[in-house]
Image (cartoon, rainbow, N blue to C red; front, side, top):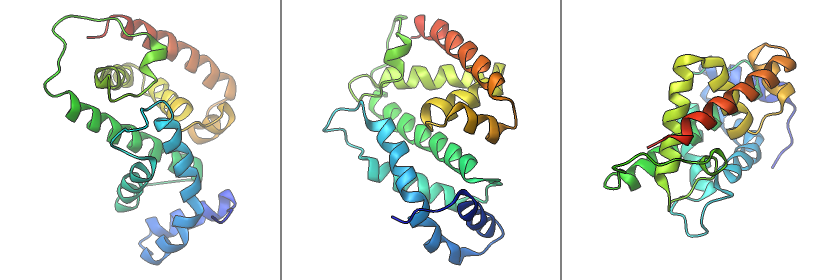
Length: 189
């Protein structure tokens, strides 16, 4: 695939946002490798026979991304939104597998296990998603940092740039969010 500068991707995203549908064909090869990297990150811990493949996850997320008129300011923000969409797709997939498997009692879920997605334990992914939603209600910035750091794989510096905050703030908020999630998942259903 073609290697693009962040500015080139940002320019194409701006043109797409402004209604120039012709840039889609130029955008796909420029963002595809990074979208696959994010999808592989999600799927790395999955069983080899998982019903969703990284390519399908990329295609589904990309279709949703270009179908909306996002206010993307740069490529990092675009990939952050992509990571969020991939998480939503996997959570929806896990929920469909879990419909008849609701746990009757509370069961502790280690934080490390919550970040490993598996069709054998869709309850873990659903519990993580629910915890992240509760965190978003309490502190949207911390929730966004978790998404960008863990799910999109962005560096502290990239997150700081995307969110317009200092890297030191990102590190502090990431640490607090991890501790909060650990506490939430220790008593998750």
